[in-house]
Every structure is written in C-alpha cells, then in structure tokens.
Image (cartoon, rainbow, N blue to C red):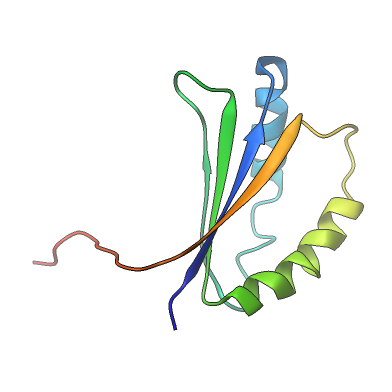
Length: 105
C-alpha cells in the first residue's frame, strides 16, 4: 500500500503570516501521535506567491480521513484566537509513487 500525501494550500495575506506560523508552532504534537501519520511540514513562500503549503504524509487514505474527521476537526472547533489567518484553502491529494532519501554510508 502506498502512502498518501495531503497538501493544504493556504492563501495568507502578508499581515497574517506571523499569526499563521505561530498557530502552527503552538499545535506542535497534535498530529504526531495519530495512527498512520508519517510526516508534517509547513512551507513558507519565499517569492512570487502568498500561498503556504501544509504538507502531511499518511500511511493510508483511511488514516488521513480518521484524523481529519476526528482529532483535526475537534482541534479546529476548539481553536481560540479569532479569525482564520488564511483567506482561502485548497486541499491537494497525492499517492506516493516513488521516493528517495540520502544515500547511506
């Protein structure tokens, strides 16, 4: 079974970037213990766009759905701190076909 990747594309106005990054820093640890979770990265744009990428990798679509419909939903419903930092969001879904890592000595 191939891993699945979910990339949440967040459009974030310049004046909300710091808020978005702080919110993700404060959520550290919320996804790491979820069954099937493999990886997380928050990617900041460096030029030409106002879109952040939230990259998560999961053992299966079912594992992602269990998290999205459970712990993630509860975390977002219980979130304090006002309006969302992003003005728009789109979810991209991919299946890992091939991968590589650093060569081992």
